[in-house]
Image 1 (spheres, rainbow, N blue to C red):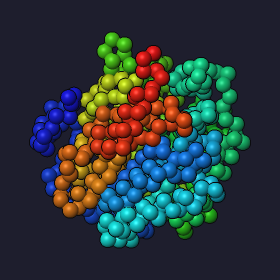
Image 2 (image 1 turned 180 degrees about the vertical axis):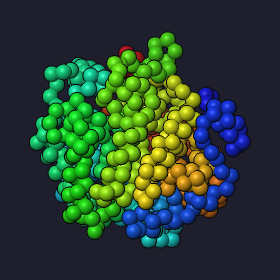
Image 3 (image 1 turned 90 degrees about the vertical axis):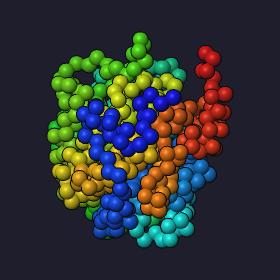
Image 4 (image 1 turned 45 degrees about the horizontal axis):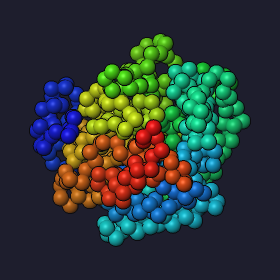
Length: 478
């Protein structure tokens, strides 16, 4: 039974919005979301974007697997005119799991083939792909690299919830090595090479990933790191600035440069043993380890630096921004408001509409700061089949340029086509935010070291995969 989302009509949802006092406006008619948009000199046919959604379903060498291709083709056929391709590691040590995509010379042909299949699926479904933009998110997982944390700084608050040895369940300590300046430079080189390869494969844009406390995201908060990549704002943004500059100089006429950016890291949460709800960990204040985070109250955003950074990135050549927040590893309710947590997670410490509002406000702040850069908003999936109505309002109010859909696109890849053809979304196809996709991402006990993930309630292959993962889980009866 639903805990929070019990709305059969927009008016029922509006009643809770008013009662909670949140700034989430809803429009009845979909109009603005169907209009075209200029992105980096290219026309995008509507305002719907698919967020970078990993399926954890690549081959062990980083090539796309059958389920990877199936997912991309479903996105292509679904009608959204901007597909933000999933996190693709730029080096083996940069991968977040054993099945994450990896871009290198050996894998280039398979990535290019998947890209063309996606375009063909879009042409077959929508009649053409001249107004379709497809990009690739280039990632270095840093602290969350699957072979072991590659940390940019020691942050005692985050170190305490970062596993250094999975088998022994040991956490990062003060003695754990941080990445050297030379290792960070090598990561920058790998990101630039990844962009070169993405251009050769035919992608329209690349994302220099700076969210969810992966490497470049962590560097933004690296006030406790010594040397040229830590401390001051100029130093903390140095590696990204160098990478963006090199990409622009070398590839600016071939690729649009984009970034998915955390604008608020927040505080780690844990499951309260008495209530099961998420509760913030005790932490000293002022806390200086969070980007976009109020040092005196880490539960509150401070968008001062992220706003400046968005403006700076525009000067450096970024032409598209995608706004996110939080960490899936220690405060998942911040990044993705949910109805129910995964089995090992905490229940939401707030009504999900509060989290939705936080996302909408963050995107609006950045869009206001960079009016000439299209900003893609986040936080829509919990709204189920009403998310387009909220996105429509944000578009009309100038708070955002595009509506980004993450979990909702796994459940309902053809949401945009339904919006275009029917003027509304179908309730029985929408994401219900019950976190089975997250549970599958955390399941590692098969022969590839990673189960593939997708929508268990809406996509039968993943219901079967989930049943298998549960039946074979060695810890289930422990």
